[in-house]
Image (cartoon, rainbow, N blue to C red):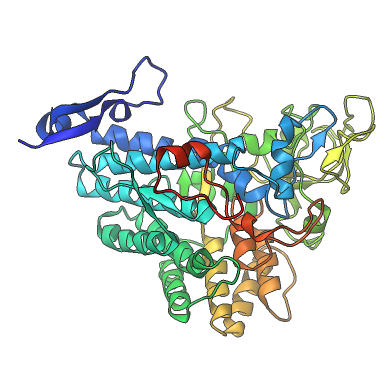
Length: 500
C-alpha cells in the first residue's frame, strides 16, 4: 500500500498558539491521512495565512509601496529608525539580509506549501479549485518580487529540494491553473477565491508577463494585451460591478456590504478575527489623534500634487470617522482638528499641522508633523484590534485601468483615453486631452495609491529606477529583491539574483 510523507504540523495548524511540533511521518497511508485531515479547516487556514504577508505594514505592502514614489517611512528623531530598515526600502539600498524582505519571501512560500499540501487530501472539486487559486495568486507575488519560485507538486517528497520555476514558467502555470479550475470556482463571494478573481489574476499575469521576462526592457505581446482586454470585457459586461459612488466605501469597515467594486478581498471579522489592516491608519496618524497612531509613514508632496483639488480620491469627510474623530479619508495635510472642530497639537504643544515637506531623516522641532498622512481605509472605531475592514486585493477600477492600458499598448489610444476619462469623471477629476504611458501610470497611481501595486506598476512602465523625492537613481539589480541566505542554503536550486 502507498505510504504518505505527511507533515502533520501543517495539517493541524502549525501557526496556531499551541505546543504542536513538526513531525514528518512516512508510515501513514493515504486512507489514514484522509481520515486525520479536515480539508475545509486546512483551506480556511490557507486563507488566514494570507493575512500576515499581505496585510502587515512590513511585508508585501512595504515591498510594493515603500520602494515606490508615493510612500515614505521617515526616521523621526529616535522614532522609526529600526536600523534603517524603512529608509533602505525607499532608497533602494536593501541588502540580502533585509529582515522584512526575507520574512515576506518565506511567508509567501509557506502559503504555497500549505495550499499544495491540501491537494493530497481528497478535497472536493471546489476546495481543490480554491486551493489552486490561492497557490497561483501567491506564486505570482513571489515571481513579481524575486523572479523565481520554489515549487513542488502535491505528494512530492518533502525531503528533496523543491524545483524552481522562472518567470515564464510561473506565468504559464498561473494562466493554465486559472483556466483549469475556472468551472469549479464559486461564482461570487469576494472573501473566497472565485471565477472573477481568477480572471483578474490572469489579467495581472498577462499584463506583466513581458516585464517578468525582461525587466530592463519589457515587451508587451499584442495577443497577451488582447487577452487582457477580453478578460476585462467579461467582467465589465457581467453587470456585477460598477465604480463606487463613494471611493472610500471600497475600504470601509462594512466594505463587504457597500462596495460595488471589490472582486477579491481578505476577510476580516470585526471584534473576532482579523489581520493587520488597522496598520494602514496606525502607521500614519499622530499620537494625539484618535486613535493614537504611531506617527510614521507619509506620502510625498509630488505625488500629492498630482491630484486635482476636486478629485474625490484626494480628500473627503467620511461618516463614522470624521464625525467621530475629525479625521478625513484620503490625505491629511495642514492643521488637524478633532470632531468638535478644536485644533489639535503635537506633543510639544505646537499646532498639529502636517506639512508637504518631509525628509527621510527628520530632526528638529517639527519632526512630528512633517509629511502628508494617508487614510485609505476608513477607521473602524467599533471593533478594537480586530477591525472589520476587509483587505482589498482586486477591485473593478483596477480591471478598468488594466483594459485601458492593454488597449494603449496595442495602439488603441482612443479606447484607452475614453476609459481613463470615464473613471476620472466618476472621481470628480477633469478629463484628459490625450493619453500616453506617463499619463496612464499617473492615473494608476491616483486610483490605486497605497493598495500594494505601485512597485509593480513602476517597473512595468520603466520608472522604478528613476530618482524621485528622497531617492537617487537606482541600479538595475533593484528590479528584483535578493533571495534570502537561509533559502539559498536550504535549496541549491535557488540562485541569488544579480547584484546581490
